[in-house]
Image (cartoon, rainbow, N blue to C red; front, side, top):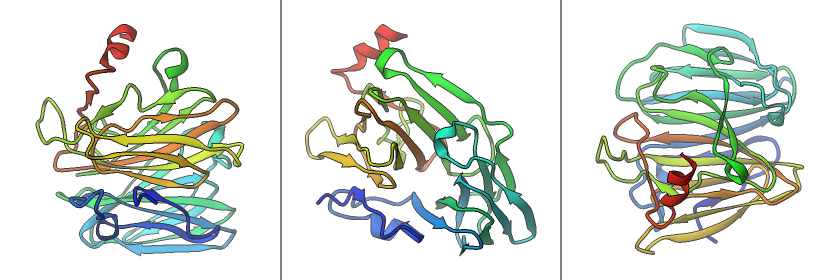
Length: 274
């Protein structure tokens, strides 16, 4: 099985723990930037961590929890009980050199997005205020987006975090595009993880990760709570009819800007729909 597809280790506690070290495989030997944890907690369940040299963005994907970090108590956060409610999430930025704790007050799904910090930013609540639902694309390429911490929000030194809803039968991260060269302003080098959810939960979706020269070409069927890694190349997603797809994207690289290039064979789709 490809190491770009990570299955959850269970249904409770820390079910994903993608680190820079364990993300490096023969398919992604140069992985240096993105880390991702997922915690599934019941009421009174507890998650904690220490950022060290990393910065972190905690996203309450579902449920409510009490969130604190070194020097800050954010109180109880969260009001989205199902990710498919499509309301903006509560999220918190945790600086490097901090301890953080999360104690669930309901069933709770917590995402911990990390990257090496290049500057000091203050601890801050990032959402739901300031996060709106944006619709992008046309026809069967329509999707809906919550930009939690993209470059228009100066809230982090490295992390870019967003979530995407792809309706049943539609495509997203499409036309196929890549951001795997450090060539600003034409393109930026950004590693990326996808945390996938399906509605209804027994569904599946597809993601292909491929380079133009064919040295990497992996097609994955993803299930509810799976994580995929995109070290380079194009990475479109398709949601089969009958199942809505959600994913939480985490990106980071040498420069906190998102510049990409569409696949030359498929760029006509973007030009037509512009």
